[in-house]
Image (cartoon, rainbow, N blue to C red; front, side, top):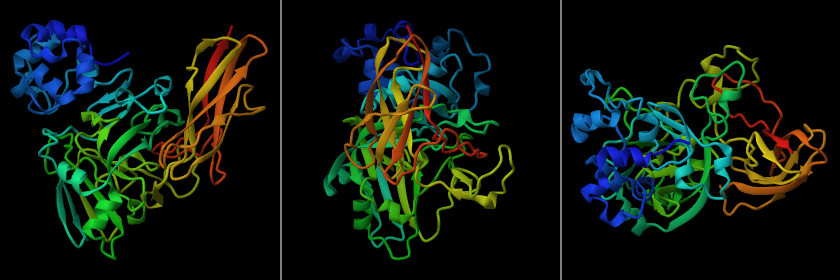
Length: 449
């Protein structure tokens, strides 16, 4: 299991002996980072910017980094901007996270195994990470501002305190899912992070509704699209470049369940999940839920920022053969995500008794789930599961069922959701070059003793 290694850091930095955690001596470092990551980062490493990126050597000191890797670093001057030493990458970038599988550390991308997504509300430490660039140098909530401009009647610059005081604050459970979730199952392989099933989460987000802020700014009649801009930095370190800037049609932006969020499960946002301010756009690719949000611009064209053009977050406008080359002009922008479900118990490859509960979650873009069925005879027959209603628009729906097996052996449990428009998860889907929108049945293998 990946995450922060408290014994390592206590040994290397002697934090408790230094007396810097006087008010937190009853907590492990992992708990301290989870509760207050920015303060913990400052106390552990003597810096505010979290986690490592450019300036780390200057702020933490070469000696500190050398102590952390257990040796001097002869070629430290050649280390690229933002590089995290490979020997520390998993422990360091996943501080405050627990059980995630690291796919990449530059940029950081990590997913959550399905069995760790069993909670109705995804804990902060279990929420997946999807980054396109490097974290901002400064994530100070007190000085953070959000600009609303472009084709508006009243351009605004708002602090987080302004958002809290000038608009009604809401708390909602909202699904965020990466458009490439399930990419690793495509054949032939599709390029990009090889997500399996864990690039999805449903945490409780607190913030203000995007539509309320846009209404106050005064949306002009010719507005077509939003453009989202963040403080994250390009992997090259070039401040003139932007790693990602996406948007949504104005009609989508004015729906009722999109939040400008400043809290996650009642706490400040985790730095890897967009602290101190982000958008949460449920039901659409997670790339529209911009992190480290600094500006929302209203435009009279479809936004053309980085990752909005070419083949990014787009699929072919027709079915294509596996491996077929598709011209760029034949791709269309992904909007709502498809119907999908996840089995969170039992875990894949589990040994179980002859009777077991099966449970999980289901979601369907801008729609709701009307039915969830499971099978344990390879799809010959299906059993209807008990399905809960969503706690609010944009939340996933929890489901559960009981299975009794007639004899010992190997079984596969399959889950299949049907949405409010009658669309059902398929056994197999059409291939696409970027590996998006994989919503095939979730299957877990179990052995019955």
